Length: 331
Ligand SMILES: CC(C)(COP(=O)(O)OP(=O)(O)OC[C@H]1O[C@@H](n2cnc3c(N)ncnc32)[C@H](O)[C@@H]1OP(=O)(O)O)[C@@H](O)C(=O)NCCC(=O)NCCS
Image 1 (cartoon, rainbow, N blue to C red):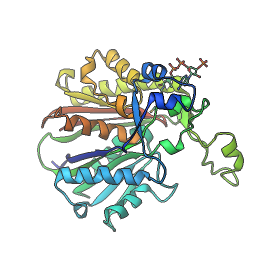
Image 2 (image 1 turned 90 degrees about the vertical axis):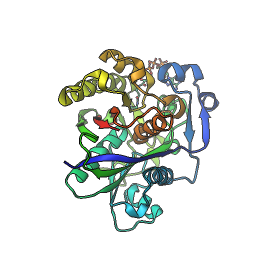
Image 3 (image 1 turned 90 degrees about the horizontal axis):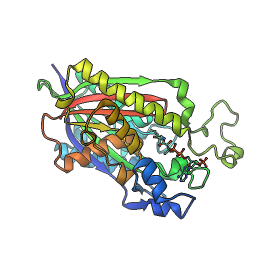
């Protein structure tokens, strides 16, 4: 049976570290508020002139080097982001050009915080169908230029950071290794609980001076609704995956949760009766990097020597859409 295995992993964060205290100089907030509500201590900002595809390029190069592969070995690129270089074309095309591999297919996945897992499910399906053998899957975000560092925008802007993570998925015939299970969900009734209005194609013209003046260009979030649904859905994902794959909780080495808020992940672990140490977190260093958060966390764990071959890992995410998704992997 053909399976997709992660043959290489890499990540990249821009060098500029922005602490909670740095943000408190721009708006009415504090290290104490941010830390106790979210667990975040600092994040990275890319600054002006950098594209989302630039961060992705560094992560992709690191993942390819880790897989001992060249860009020319790739058959396909899947690019997950909510902060694309431009509205169109897809950022995968920009990355493909930067990697210097014209002609291979590129697919952008616009699924916000679950984009990496949705991309993994799509890549896995392509590989199992025999369509491709080497797929680059990237999650990359450049949030910082699209956040409002004002008192009106502070509920959102303190939570997010920039970064990228990538994996190279390769086809393998090894039994019981690689991607074992994926589960994808969405509930569009909550589409506006975390969204950005600015690109409103129903309007003529779709973008006005007023859109800028009224703050439509910044993300809007109903934080409490997001929080409540995230805890319920992420716990459900774990229960479903364990049941479907007939796996006991003790056989899961780590849960790799999306990094939106440390409190969400702590409550999910509590709800499931899992020890907190089973849930890995690095939100302290990077904030919420949306589609990049899971590969960034996986890469951090890998580089820290926490992941051994054949470890069972359960990836879970929840975010804007609402969307939620999981993947069970044998490393
Ligand atoms: C955003 C979030 C941290 C807010 O936490 P909370 O516990 O709901 O906030 P509280 O109700 O305790 O506090 C809200 C108050 O803090 C204020 N506040 C909001 N952002 C603030 C900030 N950065 N600094 C200081 N005060 C802030 C609000 O204006 C509000 O003030 P008020 O009570 O005077 O109206 C929380 O709702 C959350 O994490 N939600 C999920 C967000 C998320 O995960 N998004 C990404 C999903 S992928």
